[in-house]
Amino acid sequence: MLAFLLSFVIVTIGTILPRNAWFGRQVSRVGEPGHHIWLTIDDGPDPLTTPALLDLLDSHQAKALFFVVGQKVLTHPELTREIARRGHHLGNHSLSHPSSQFWSLPPWRLWREVAGCQQALQQVLGHPATWFRPPVGHHNPFLANILRSLGLNMMIWNCRGFDGAWRDVDAILRHIARNLRPGAIVLLHDSTPIASEVLDRVLQLMQERGLRPTLPLEKKETELPLPFSWHP
Ligand SMILES: [Zn+2]
Image 1 (cartoon, rainbow, N blue to C red):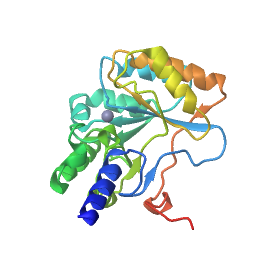
Image 2: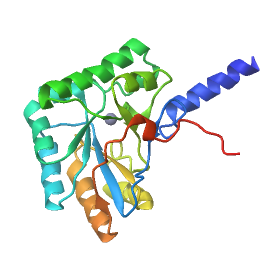
Image 3: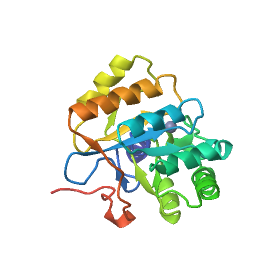
């Protein structure tokens, strides 16, 4: 009984906490030295919001990694290509973004979500992604093998302001400001009514703090942090 409870607790914590790496290698901070940060923008592309985000990034000469949803990629192929044309990277954020159930999907449905987005990117851009971010950051023990077999690495974050749920831009910025420092992987969201206002203020704050948004170097899976290690 105790063993069952213990394994239940381990699986639950490992599944729901985005920044644990018990179920596979992942990146949750920028490892490169200097004042680098990575800006990541989830849930697009969206014709109502993405064009303004691209213009803001251009005006600050900043690059971002857009974690896109496969079904939206197929619906808006030209906008998807425009993101790449402007020099940004595109990552895999699942085919349909099943946020409430992603952590509980069986392996065959996880495969469909991850591989389906890879196929959409291949079809529209001519190549698949190398980075994956799970919807709402939840993952389960089956995901690591699927990512490995598709050549994907998982990227989480260490700086966010809950802009996918909150609408108070001042509160969002206060939250982001606490962790906006060298090494930050900033999580922002496309496709919200406040998306461009949040990005504009984050770009200004980065400038004030002398931080440079860069794009991640492509890393091999073996170069990523180990899933779990004891430090005696
Ligand atoms: Zn998302």
